[in-house]
Structure formats: C-alpha cells, structure tokens
Length: 573
Image (cartoon, rainbow, N blue to C red; front, side, top):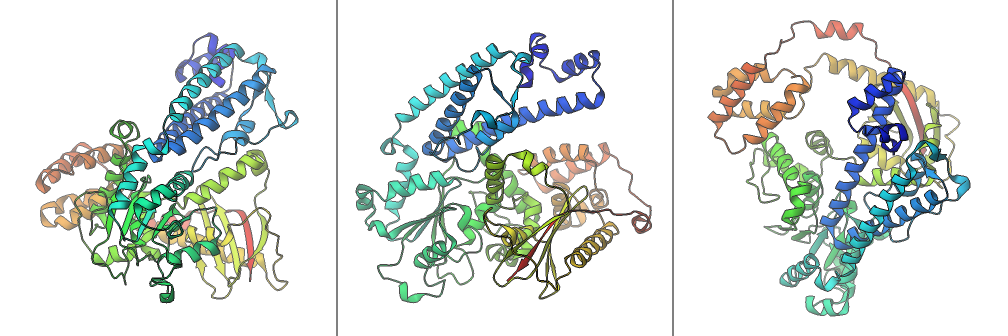
C-alpha cells in the first residue's frame, strides 16, 4: 500500500535506493527511513508468502485452492466496498480480516467488520483511483479463476480419481491417508464415503473415518484404537464391526501414535519438511509392527507447479542433508538411502524426544503447525495491538491433570521456554512439551496457584539454570550451522583422505561463506568422494579464516548474561 502514496507513486519510485534518496532529500531521519523501508520489505515478503501458500493449496487439492480463491475474492470485494466509502483499510484491520490465509481456510466467509472498528488511513495521501483500478483487476482475475475452478468436479479431478484407483488396488489393506490441509482431507473423506465410491472400494462407509483438529482428543483416541486395535491394546475390537479400515488424517495424527496394525500409507500431498514425512511413516513403521514391509505411496506435484513451488527440490535437499548427517535406512521419496546407524533411525520412528530434538535443528522442523495456526486465529480475532499492549513479566494459571509446576518464558536475543516440574524438580526445555502443557482455549478459566507456592523463587531458579547453561555452552566449541555440520560429519566418515580439511571446517565460518558453501554442497551430491574433497580443498584455499586462539572460558566469565522475563504460567493438578 505504501508504494501507492502519492509522493512515491507519482515519481514512479520502485527501487528501495531511489525511495531512500528521495526521503533523505525530504529531510526524513535515518531511523524513520529505515522503518519505512522495513515496512515496504515486509509487505513484499507477505505477498511472496501468500503466493506460495496459494500454490501449496493448489498442489494439495482443487477444493483447498477453490476455498482460498473464494475467500480472497470476498476480501477484495470488502476492501473495494470500504474504498468506495472513502475508507482505506490499515494493516491492523487487514490482519483481523484476512491474515489467517494459512493452514486452513474455511467456507464460512470473512468476519464482519463494522465501521466503528476500523482505523482507516487518510485516503487523501494515496492514489485512490489507482488502488481502485488494481483492486477491480484483481477481482476480475479471481472471478475468472473461480469460474474455471467450478468446472472441475470430483469426478474430473484427476488427482482424486487417482487416489480412488490406488485405494481400490489396495483392496483389504488397512490404509492411512495423510494430507497437509484440513479442508483437503475433508474433501477426500466426503468423496470416499460416497455410496458409488464405497461400492467400488468394496467396504462399508462406516469403515472409513477422519482425524483433524476439529475432532476432540477423546474421539481421536477412540478412532485410533478402532483403526489399530492390536497395537493399542484392544484386541477385542479386531475383526468386529467397530474396526476401521481406512483412516484419513492431517498431521495432527503424525506425532506419538501407534498405528502398527496398518502397513500402507498414502501421502496425498507433501509437507514442506521431510521430517514430517518420516514422522508419518513412523506411526506405522515402529517396533512391534507385524509387517515386514511398509508400503508408501506419494502424490507428487504436477511438473509445472513443481517448477514454481520447488517443493520436491526442497524436500530432496533436506533429505540429502539428513542422509549425509545421520543417515536414512529407507527411501522416503525414492532417493538412495544411506544407512549409518539403524538404531538411530529406529529411535526416529519410535519418536524418542532427544532424536527429534536434534532433527528439529538439522532440518528446521516447525514446532507444530497447530501453534502457528492458533496464533494466526488469535490475531484475526483480537488484533496485533492487543498483543503489543501485554507487558513483560505477566503471569497466569491453569489446571492440568497429573502436572504441577511453572512454565516460564525469558528472552534476550533469543527466547527460552522452560517448565519447572514441582514434583521432580526437573526443568524441561523441549518446546513441544511446553506447548502441549500451556496450550489452551481463550475461555479456559484462570486457576490461582497454591498459597504455598513461591512463584518468583521458581522463576529465579529457572533463570539461574538458563544462565548457567548458556555460560557452559560458551566454553564449549561453537555449534556449527548447516551445511558445515554435515560436511564435518562426512569428512569424519571419509577418514584419512579428508583429514587435512577437518581443522578448517570444524571452525565456524562466516554466514557469507556459508551461502556459497551451501551451493557447493548441494551440487556435490552426484560427485565421487575424491572430487568432493578437491572442491572442499579449493573452497578452503579461496576462503581463509583466522582460527581463534584466545581463551573462551576467560571471556565467558567476564560477560554478563541478561534475561528479560516475558511471562509465566502456574500449572496445578
């Protein structure tokens, strides 16, 4: 929107350097110019992210994409409606109306926004006619898209029909069908339950069920038991009318569930992160599985869509990184596995916390899509300004069965989340565990802490623990970033022929070097070991570094670590 300010637009300033020069001439301060350019940069980033989200939803299903198009069309019409009244919506109102264009849109439309809720921008400062014309152009494009999408029914949706063919070919198999978006999986579920489709598959409709974020945890557990009764300790359900044969799910099912009764998984669409695929497969391929082989079917994006999304390319690159560092004993997407330690892979499939923690860093695995989704929903209903007004150091209290302790959040340049368990005296830092403890509905009642609980004493203990850990880390060798960490592992595995490179690559390299190193490493996958060593040798010679000789322990003792309390939550049982 800021590019349509009259002074910027009329001078046809599109380049950031041109804008900076113009604003400097107008007497703007460096700080004000910086903030303005940052705002422009964020706007461009949001546009790029929204484009990728739309394409990802198209890759997932026609249904998911159609919902997104219809929702954006409604928003554009609403935007134009306000524009016709001389009201130009600000960023805050945009966030409340449209920001949750993420994991799952819905068909309920946009929330109602009344005029008294809107903080509008002064329209006299902007090229309103230009904004109006471009909005009308967007609406026309979206209407054409909507019309074309309406011509695609379930019966001529080639991807959906291929799924039906695949399920029919797997007759009598117990199948899990995974997908990334809730509305995609609801679309699949409703179609497979149709009478004409059920008759082709050869099972009754009550043998198919679905799990997503709309299903209550108690009912999720019931459906998991009905689908995989033996692995969940309910053999009496096996071969009865209660047993399920096909389970359709989003990734709410991919963590910590036993589905070993099944031997077939279908990835109807692919997540951005390969570890999520490993977790999906790991619900079936677990210790105690009665099956010698787990069958995995993957739906890949169309070639033209892949050329834009680069989804497979990203997945293959990340799988290659995992393969080189810890190894994979099986193929995930058709790549050649590189088994290094079968026990390690078994631990991954068995969902051992410490292994998943390590893989989170290796592959930048998200803490959980559900958290991002919840935050965006909150922003939509409450707005960002309400969040910004919350002071640091505030506390609350909730009740959780079987847990008693205090969740504490600190920050400096990073954020630190900890749960102090009052029963054991242990401090848990795993973010996923912390989120599971404190995640709650906004209507959940406040529960005051016990009278005998000294909350601030616990906060001090957690703070001292974090500071002690950080000081300990400072005297240890600095952790290497990717791809340097993978290269060191590879060099160690090669042994003597690569020994002369270890000292160089074991020292942290500047970020500017890492960008170039990443390109080199990605291109080296098809080379012979001696060719890779030669390339790394050339890189070392072209990028000299000074290896530190100072005493890091002395420096760390002189450095003061400051932490700011963000907030705390007491948890009682």
